[in-house]
Length: 89
Ligand SMILES: [Zn+2]
Image (tube, rainbow, N blue to C red):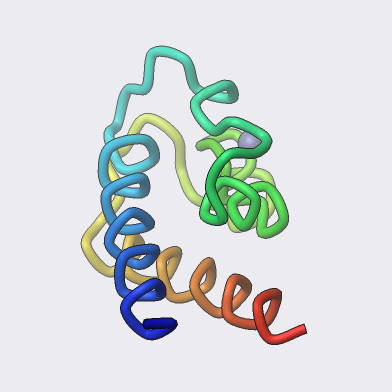
């Protein structure tokens, strides 16, 4: 049951990153990630992966350029590691 829950969270995580962070142009960048409502949103703020502004500031990810598959995967791995750690406590 618990494993299934984590699979679902990972799927959401992948689609949030793909749809809200990966595009080169994001209309509401900086406001696309709610502060609460989903464990992935919370993780995104905790890890500075909430918007392209934060990715640029903390990870030197260029703005205005679509994220590569590898960059997206790295973000998902980072966020899932954070969520796993939070849930263990
Ligand atoms: Zn941000």
